[in-house]
Image 1 (cartoon, helix red, strand yellow):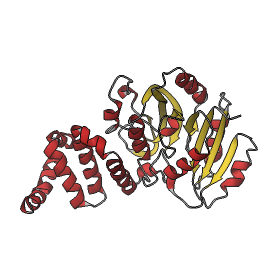
Image 2 (image 1 turned 90 degrees about the vertical axis):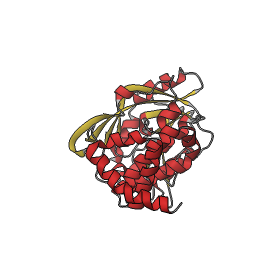
Image 3 (image 1 turned 45 degrees about the vertical axis):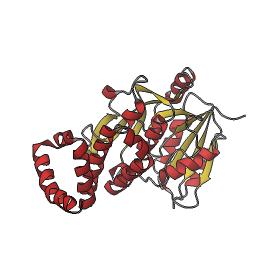
Image 4 (image 1 turned 90 degrees about the horizontal axis):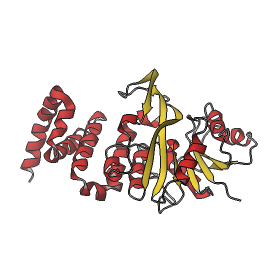
Length: 309
């Protein structure tokens, strides 16, 4: 008999935190689950740790090559048998009662609501996105909760409200078995949020359901991988951005600034210039000093573009 919930947990060389992450799933009061641990070609002996749990609900799956979290999650989804899908990260902890409450919520929603998500208490980062020990915040910001009545697709283009380990998803909420873009080594949650909003509705709760840790090797702290993730979002959802011109301008501005931070000056300035053509108010987000520097940088770039017409 198939379990009600399939939990997919990708991991790569995280033996120090993996057992606690697994235990937080297996110790949930809601027991009708399977836990699929996807070993993303670790060099550590993950299999011994996983099989050592000696729990029939636990399954071990090893990827032959390291493909990143998105590819590992897709591999786990192929093996999943549950009506509902949940995710866990190898350095996070589910809070007690997380799964039972979310199953009850989702079972009582109409079919067009394909997911329920909660918040996470995030250690290692504060609300201003400063990273370091002792910093803590709640994410996403509960004051900006997404509602069922709003245009969730439009909202998701600029505001990634879903961390996948915070949620529970109907198995049929997306038409394809590959839910994640394997070419995105960062921001795959954001890409997934937009993908989900294209097909279903999301019920967002403001109750914390996960304790999450930002570790020194966390993908979210890698600027170059984040840029790649932004580029993949633009490529995967270009048709949607063309329908929402304001959001396109703001995303171009965001991507342009990210490119500048990793030294890709020409590409970054080009995107910022295009964003300002459609959304001049983007300058206000930079402050007076930042706007002045941006305009000085853009002046020679604009002349070069004008001369090449």
